Length: 116
Image 1 (cartoon, one colour):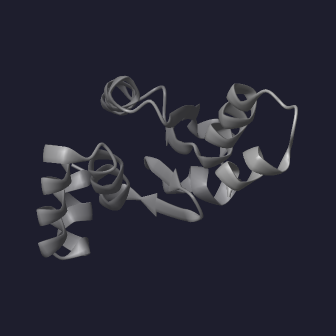
Image 2 (cartoon, rainbow, N blue to C red):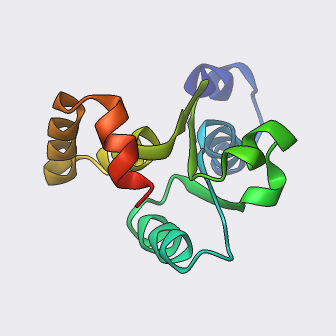
Image 3 (cartoon, rainbow, N blue to C red):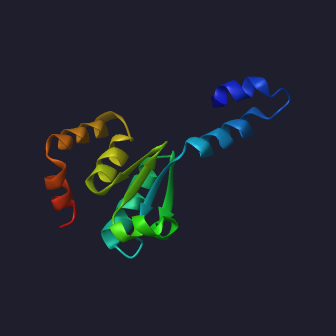
């Protein structure tokens, strides 16, 4: 969609348009900055992924804040608990996609381990 826009807007700075498109397509991680593990994970994943916007959990809806979990938003999908960790790491690509193997475990067990 964004590349199509570049061709439709003559005379515009292509780099600026691509930057705007990148902001639109950017994934987001919402973390609890008071949690040392959550904060460290957010810093680590942010260093690895250039297409990630790091946000505080306070920027979520009240309902999502009450979940007290890491939240990962990718395009139109929202992931919570262990799914947020798995999907955010898998988005790094390459070797990191091997984390999908954890999806073989039932979500209930994964989330139990996540909450420990």
